[in-house]
Image (cartoon, rainbow, N blue to C red; front, side, top):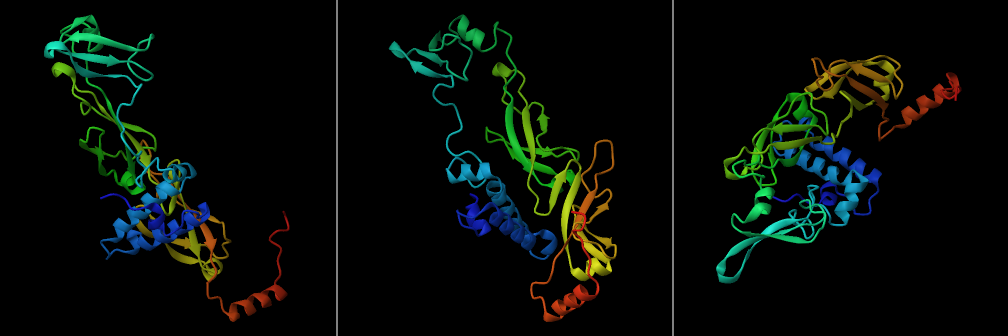
Length: 317
C-alpha cells in the first residue's frame, strides 16, 4: 500500500514552517508511541507512519524534492529508475533475413569508449568486441554485478540487533541481520546475493547501506543518546523519582532537589551498544514545564517569592 501524503499524516499545510512541522511530529509521535499505547495494536502502525512523514518533511532538501514531485511519500525517486538515453547499454536488432545482432551504445556513464557514438557487434558470438565486453578471453566468465540498496532502521532495531527485510533493485527480498554496533551510513555486504554471473560464473554481492531513522524522542551523539525530559515545577524543586523512556523500556530516574531547567543527568549504559562491549549513555536534559491551566494561587505564590526571596540568575551574563 502506498504511503499517505506526509502533510496529511502530520496534519499540517504545505505552507507550514519547519518549526510547525517539528511540533506536529513530536505531538503525534508522543501520542502514538508504543510505550504509551501498549493495548492498541494499531499504534505502532500510526507511529511508523508519522516517522515516515517526518523523514520526508523534516529536512529542507527532501521536503523540496517532495514538493517538486521528485520523490514520493516514502522518499523514493519517482519514475523509471533504469537506463536512460546517453547512459550506455545495448539492445538487440534484427537485420536482413532475420539475422539478429546486438547494437551497443556508448555515452556518459556507459561503457568506456573515448570516441563516443555507437559501436556494433556482429551476430551471436560475433567478434572480438563481444568477447572483450563480456569477459575477455573465451572460457573465462566474469563475476556477476553487485547490487546496491538502502535500508532504514530504527534505533530500537540497532539496539536489539533485529533482522530486517530489504528489497533489492531486482525485486528480490533479503533478510538482513542488523549489527548492534552499526552506524548510519555504514554498509553490510551479503556475499553471492547480487546478479548471477554469465555462463554460470559466481554471483555478485548485495551491498546494503544502513541509515538510521529519525527518532521522536532521542537524538544520537555517536553511541550516546540525548533526551529532553519535561518535568513539573514541583519535581524540579522537590526532586524525586520520575519515569524516563529508554530503548529497552521505561526506567526510574532520581531528580536531585532544586534542579534547574537545562540540567543534564546521565544514565550510564542506556545508549547504543559499542564495539568491544558495553554501551553509550543516555543524557537526560531537564525542561521545566508550567501547567497550561496555571491558577491564581501559583501567580500569588510567585509574587510572594519575588518580593521576599529575589535572586538574579543572569547576573554573570
